Length: 46
Image 1 (tube, rainbow, N blue to C red):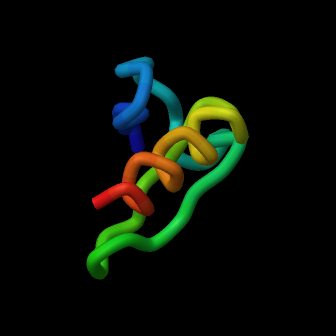
Image 2: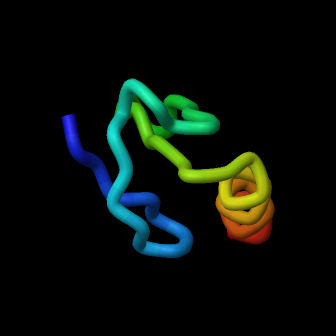
Image 3: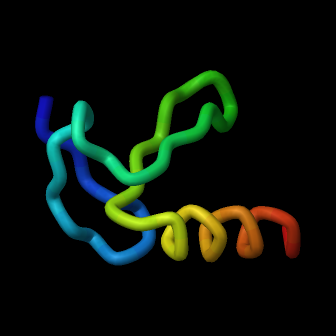
């Protein structure tokens, strides 16, 4: 399944994502661990 990294906007295959996490009940996929860390840091500031 093709998904979009919420940080950088890159389209990636969910099966090949470098990282993923569950946020607010939804699985979010990332192209790189650095994008996941950026996403988590932004959420922590809220």
